[in-house]
Image 1 (spheres, rainbow, N blue to C red):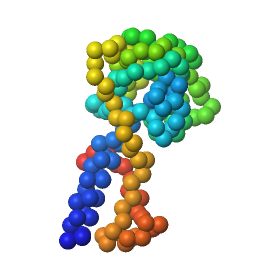
Image 2 (cartoon, rainbow, N blue to C red):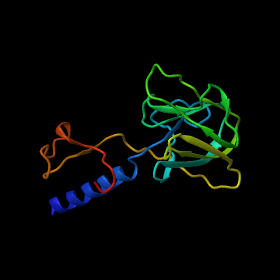
Image 3 (cartoon, rainbow, N blue to C red):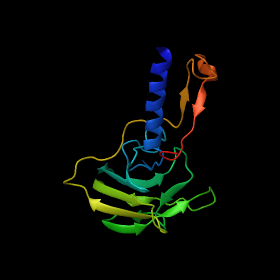
Image 4 (spheres, helix red, strand yellow):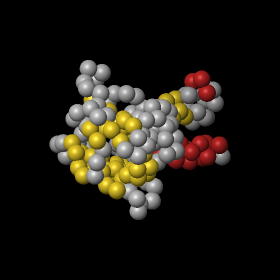
Length: 170
């Protein structure tokens, strides 16, 4: 009986990892969590490499992280570019040597869409005044570990087996 329950739990954990395999986090003084990597709001993935978020932002800088780490990240092509309604090109920061640009946000309600599906990453900003909140504010762990009779760790948590993300259905 324990093996069946464990297998079911393992399948549920795997499904959660696959759904959130592609991530974009909002970070900066403009967000409710500031510069906290642990509490950064998560954009909702709405398509292949397309992410959306709707909510309130405060005055201050804003940029986008792809992991709960400072690199890689996305920002404007020049620092302190005003976050305004319309579409702008995003610049990828892939190393600490690259410019660390952030958008300058004026407090308000925004609808943000990041599209990484084409050759040029783009951010589309719209007025979010009439839209409900959209995004994933709950904490999603960077790693999930498996324990139990069906693993090499048994029930010993120090020996838990780390599970790795993979593409959906692979």
